[in-house]
Structure formats: C-alpha cells, structure tokens
Image (cartoon, rainbow, N blue to C red; front, side, top):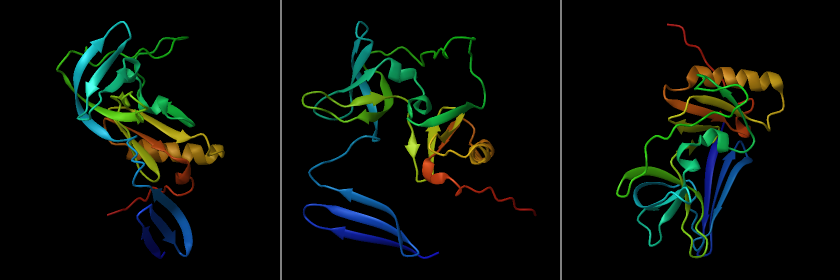
Length: 196
C-alpha cells in the first residue's frame, strides 16, 4: 500500500491530505485565524467553587477561566460520546432501574490542581467548558484513561462485525483504560496471533 501525505499551505489556510493507493483517505483544513481548542488537555487550578450552580471555574492559563459542571467531573467520556454503543467490561456499582451512580473522585477545593480537557469552545466572554474525563481520539479508536468500558460506533450496522470488534477491544484494552471503536474502524481492526 502506497501512502502519501500532501500539504498545501497558504496565508489563509493549510490543507493536509492523506492519500492511500491514489485515493483520498483524510483531508484536514486549518484556518490560522480560527484556532480550535476542543480536545486540548490542561493542568488547571480551581479558582472558584460555586456549590449553588454545581460548578467551578478553573484557571487553565488563559485570560478567561474555564467552566466545569460537577456532572462533568464524574461522567464517563464514553457515555458522553454520541453514536456509541457501550458494553461494560467490569460492572461498577449499579442498582436495577437506576442509572449508574458516579461517586465523586474528590471534593473540589480552591487551589486544587486537576487535569481537564476542553469539550466546548469559548464563546464571547464565556470561557471554555471543561471535563475531567480525558479521552484521546485516534484514527480508528478512542482511548479513555481511567475507564473500563468498550464501545463500538452505532454507525456500524452489522451485528456480527460489532461483536467481532468488541471481542478485539476486550483483548487489546489496557488495564485502567476504556476503548471505543470509531466508525472508520469497521472491517479494519484485526487481531493477529503470533505463535513462537
């Protein structure tokens, strides 16, 4: 398979194309005046806790503080992912008829340091929305540190393929991490066994 990376950069935009065997696989376009921050990870400091709003403002090194709702402190990034079918590998505490009760990792206190990821761009005078549940997206998979779930995109309609992908994810999932197979991973993930 022949792979090429084609880059075209001008003063108004930068375009990067990934071409495999003459076919376009991915195209990225970036505009210099429109910086995107969603997905960026920061070590932040709690500046102000607002229990009445169930939120806090965090200093991430910007002129304006980021905002985190208490639900974003405990909610799994896997459950927040749109179009993903989840399967629990190890069942946490769960009662019939109720949603999983997430226990707070720790009470937020002023001056406390916490690792966060931007989930919504800043708008006007409002800072970015943050979450403490980090996820690291790749081309085929999303790695979720601190989680123990496997998920497959609901856009993969074939039941046999979904089951095959979940079995692969269970086998390759590192301890203490969750994995989500993205739609583009359909028919591409293979588990190769090597006998010595």
